[in-house]
Image (cartoon, rainbow, N blue to C red):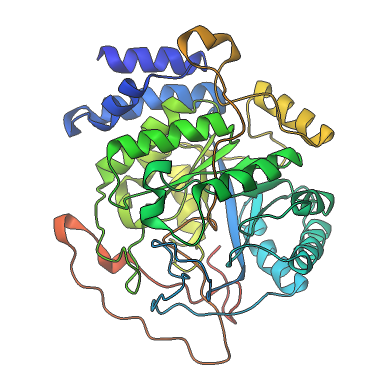
Length: 422
């Protein structure tokens, strides 16, 4: 297929595809699916070999969020049966992080529900970061605390944070249909603050919210311009009790095409399969590793993932290897820029593409992309309030092969008395 040959050639040159080419990937047939995965795999192996980076989520504060993000089980007005708790203490968060690191996680993602942190919250998270790094040498820490105020990103970096996550989630044109309590511009501002402080930008999307192909392409091209070092691709988990509870729009094949499109548009960044992979990719998860080079280990924020050992077995059985702590995730040309930016406390002058490809429209753009969101969406963290866990309800069969029975609220790990799924 000429399209795939062209996309591979551009990916190996770190050159951006056109919007039409990206849309064409999403429009390919199931008969061509393996060819699409193979083509994206060539680009993935060029920049990341057969390494898989493991990330581990610790939900510092769960539920009772004042924002109305339609996809989130922690949103204002949600009746999802998640557990709720306030801030974990630094030693509790550090113990939770240690479980993920012991399972092979290289990065720990600290997430808290809410619109954004107060200065006191930033100090609290700073102490948590220090505790984690004291007990887990070499671990990366990414904070995900919502909208940042002036100076907060700098204080997080001074405390030892390596990255900040704030997902773009959906296209600018449809953002208002998903969230009304803050704007797309608010999210852009937070990513600018994080990037300007020298933190590595982690910003991604959520697929399956009823968006059009054009919206998916818009958000991924915005992420390319945003210069995100890592792009989490979440697949909506339609939690009962949220406005998007009935949005079962994804098949494993559709998920693979979305991941391939992201890889072609952002060839040399960390593409992470995030929330919802177990629900929507299901037995096709190993095939997705040929496209993405990063996953979350074990559970998510308010939903259960598959067992951590199952993740490790899947990686090994598919012929991949877990990325070690001593290995730099990003290819050298991006890692050098990121290191320079971190040292200077300013955003790198790089993008997820080739600076030499400007004549083809493959330039990097500005850092005024977008971001926002509290970690992998559609999932969240369970919590303990001193009461017994809420019993899980049996899931009704879904339409079009949807596996609603795979949606399970997390009842273990951070914020609970049960061992984590790592």
